Length: 66
Image (cartoon, rainbow, N blue to C red):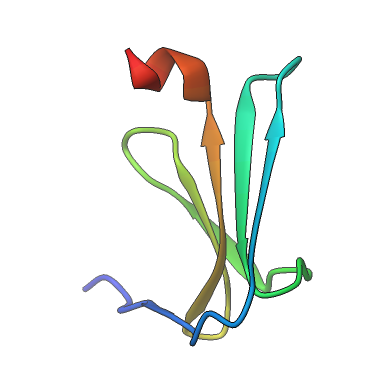
């Protein structure tokens, strides 16, 4: 059974886009190291610490906008 993940109370949303690599990085709160990550079927990566999602990485971001 999949582990249930939750997003912490968002006090600060940090969004960074790397145009050269075409990757969008989203951090909930100040960026910090994750304890683990999960790659979803669509290649989006969820980063978490314990049972809290602390960030999301979206590769090929511009292609997804089309």
